[in-house]
Image (tube, rainbow, N blue to C red; front, side, top):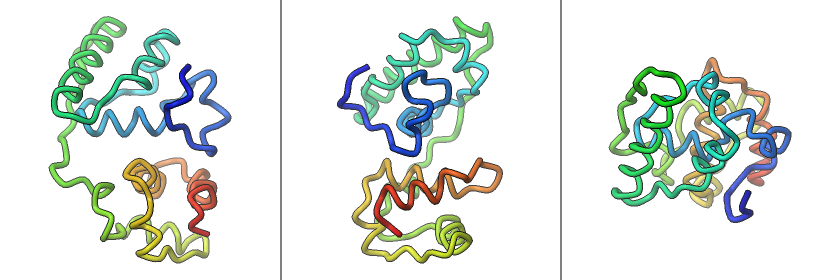
Length: 153
């Protein structure tokens, strides 16, 4: 696996095996509008998982290529067409000026307040991770770890 990909320290227990979907792939899923279930991820080979980590998904062309690759991969592995997700035209993680309420509430739960300046200094991927980790129904044990890793505490 190449080292130029961003894995977070809070993901360290599973990034070598890629047994869970890393944040950077989840970011690409939301960007390309495809739902990927963990059970589908587990049906993919290590090389296919690594490809989903490494393939670019920034420009419109890259996003379309990523989406097509992922749709084909899911269909090949499961025999079921990929489920589409709505693509946010203005995703919260791209807005460095507004700290989402879910992140504020989760931070307060763990006894923190995140300053707007610190939110602004985060990368879109870091903001994405905090938004995902702050949502109800998500396993939130990594939220405090992410806050420490991103120097927000």
